[in-house]
Structures are given as structure tokens and as C-alpha cells.
Image (cartoon, rainbow, N blue to C red; front, side, top):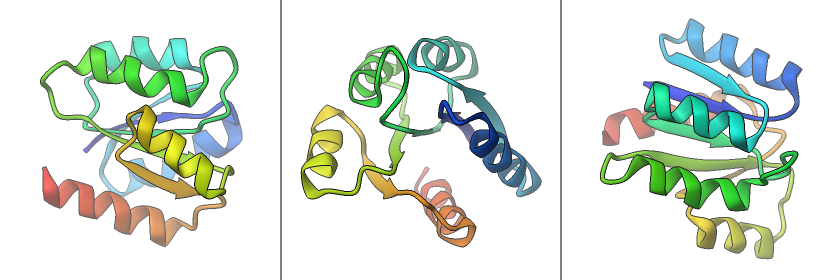
Amino acid sequence: MRILLVDDNEDASTSMAELLTLCGHDVRTAGDGAMALEAAERFEPQLVLSDIGLPGMDGYALAPALRRLAGTRRMVLAAVTGYGQAADRERALTAGFDHYLVKPLEADILLRFIDAQAEST
């Protein structure tokens, strides 16, 4: 899959990108919302894994912007965040995320999630 990782924690993003690349995915990273929109426009990801707490444009604002950018093209958006309260989840889903995953996210859970998304495309 073409996967865009959006996280301002560069170490976490790099580690996740390396893991997903080893598993055969084409991965790009972005450290904030503006970079994510630029990357999404060029890369056309099938799946975006985005943190909520980003500098500048947060994930709640990023999700609808990515939806507008994708237009009719299918793009799965998953929030991957440390915000674990029910209200946080509801706000993310209302903003346009399809899925909500809470950090810390174990590698096997992440890989199973991505495999399920790949099967549904």
C-alpha cells in the first residue's frame, strides 16, 4: 500500500516507516499538517496514519483537508494518537477519520490493521 505517516515525533515516524517499508509498503512521512497535504497531493496515499496533536494544523483540521484533496479517490484515514478518551475518538471520527488507534501501538496490531485495509481496497 501507499502509506503516509503524519507525526511530529520524528523518531517514532522513522521507525514506523522502516517497519512498513520492510513489509513491502511504499511509505512517506510528514511532520505536520501542511507537509502532509503537500505529500498527499504528490503521493496519493491509499492510507494515512496521522497523529492528532500536530504543530500548526492539528489532525482534526487535517482530516477534512485530506478528504477535500482526495476528492472521489479512496483514501483511508486513521488517527494514531495518545488521546484515548471517548470524546477524543468521537471528535476524530466526526472530523473525517475512518479509524482511531491509540498509542502506544504495538507493531503486530499496526500490521494487522494495515493488512485489513489492504484487503479491503
